[in-house]
Amino acid sequence: MAEDRYSYEVIEFGKRLRTIRKRKNLTQLDLEIKSGINHGDISRIENGLKNIEFFTIVKLAEALEVELIDLFRKK
Image (cartoon, rainbow, N blue to C red):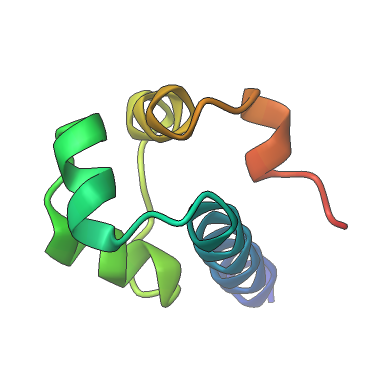
């Protein structure tokens, strides 16, 4: 049961990441260059297929030039 909730959160996080990335007119490759995170991993994160560590989230927020909370805030 708890795993279902976490899966939902991972999927929602990925959707928010994709939305912010596209809003900033960045490709996954652009984000890879800015963050140092492989674009294949970015794709898996955006599709809810990869759970990520906090440090990775920090790197993504910095690369996207957003506050950490923006990657978690439901809009």
